[in-house]
Length: 140
Length: 367
Image 1 (cartoon, each protein chain N blue to C red):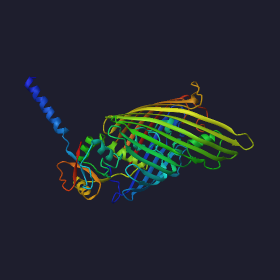
Image 2 (cartoon, helix red, strand yellow):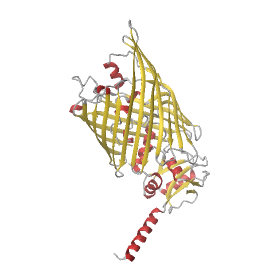
Image 3 (tube, each protein chain N blue to C red):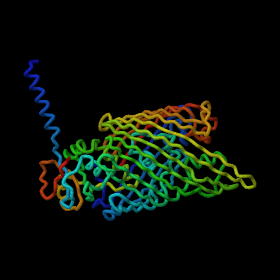
Image 4 (tube, chains in turn yellow, purple):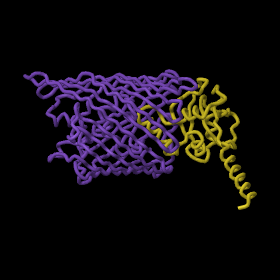
């Protein structure tokens, strides 16, 4: 392989990686949530049922998508578990009497509408999904 | 059915459930109260729960559980938990009613089969034939989670105090019966305890400690039974790294009892049994998990290593396949050395062989 072809391939691979690494999912919150940012660990704690507050002390309630690209990417970026593992974690808590299952919605549009109208609600959608009326949390 | 489609209406009122059916085969001794030598399907479990999120701080719920494990469990449906749960603030919550006891890595989740890879949790600590008594208490629990600062992680705690009753149809009562203690009432007592678990600053590493204490008293057909406060501490750790989970737990049960037969002097005896396990689990794919564990119990105050009844060592390899988000199947093999746990005289009338192989297949459904 020529040296120039090899360098081109490396740049192409790096570009693909960069596109993949750029998160397409954003974390949205009702405007009542005082925080403007959160760490990945904070988001993971909230969506795994380990915490119901963000750094400011705001009480938050996680809202889930039932499936789709945003849900899959959210699990990869923030939870680090498969959907089966994610559900299993929640159900273990439900079946041991620790909590109820979080509310889930069918679509990203429904997610935005629910988060917008519910104090404390926190959810996730693709960056390209219109989400005026809710705040976007910066991930540190 | 999608993952979270089971919530009713406004999703404040939710109903969930599961059911499993097992096939168990052993090549030597009959195991866990079943006639496993000829292959047994006598292990069925199911549960259904209802939760109502009354307000953002108040929840009420109940779970009914059915277990049939050979001669144990039977057709009675038990209340697994039934509670009110009030979240006082971000650090403190209170549950009251019949409440699960959070002890060690698995006590509060051990009767939810879809929640873990294994078909059988380590018999030395979480014996499926012994678990019914230790699952819940009638009283209150204070729980919460406290951040320890930017670089020190987080601490979860649970402390409880309540009454408990010895399950009348599981292995504990069968062991009493086989040792000649026949109760005319259900033995019961107090059970205080706590659990502390620290999510360390090391990503994926959690360490914890628990203590379950309990006393017991009961009336025998020919006397009385009294057990002063027994102590059962547990120390455990769990480490998640990508698709791999490593965990382990060490426990030591310290329990003494006094039996007074009418017309005789009181007779005391005790146990001081250490047990531990080490586990490794790996998510090979999104649907397939595999794993193995080793566990060991010394079942005598001064165990004799040449007497199989004094110990129980077990090697286990396991796999689980999630067919979809509702259905799953498990397959597991065990090699057991020693007879210190899980065996009963009533279905091993010719005595026990020192070693037994076990094969367990399971299918389950959860919603």
